Image (cartoon, rainbow, N blue to C red; front, top):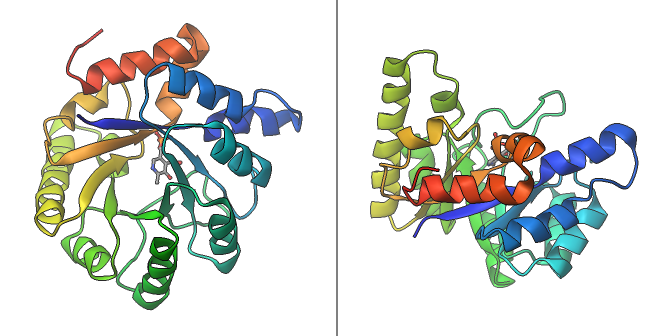
Length: 241
Ligand code: PXP
């Protein structure tokens, strides 16, 4: 069974656009849970532009589903993760000027730091994942530093302008997924996935988890969050709605 972890950052984006108290990503997480998703994800950015510390603490407390905290590999984030103890930490690269996460993490270059962080989180019982491009060297290094999972960046696939280009990126995701699974990693995928383009990725059987935010939240504006989550779950289960 493929799992779907729904990213609730965009609920906080709307709230922060007015610096008010609604909509609340914690409420949204409750609806996502009742709709049948398998996990909740939130990205606490260094600049707190959407998710804030209170959200992370409350999500941990309120949500019964596995809670995946996306964060940069910094001392500040490590101290929050150690205190909150999410079920999973996904390390992501972070640049202040980007609109959303661009490009995968360079695990090879940051090997020493990430290895220490993974070791520390694992000692607290937290599952670890690396958000990386489907690059075999990055996948191998993720395993070597002790990560449990990798989340393969699907942004290039999602942004492909032609079918041939999409096919090329899908093949590289497949190759990475096969290699990662062989190495003993759990394989996830995320970024830019939509109700339209997900069908090009679901044939990659090695991918066991999907991390999706924007597209689900966009659809929820029209059909409600409950329906939006159920529609994506149906696509992942191969039952088109
Ligand atoms: N996975 C990671 C690591 C991300 O940074 C993001 C975006 O916050 C997502 C998945 C979800 O991407 P999207 O919002 O495009 O579905």
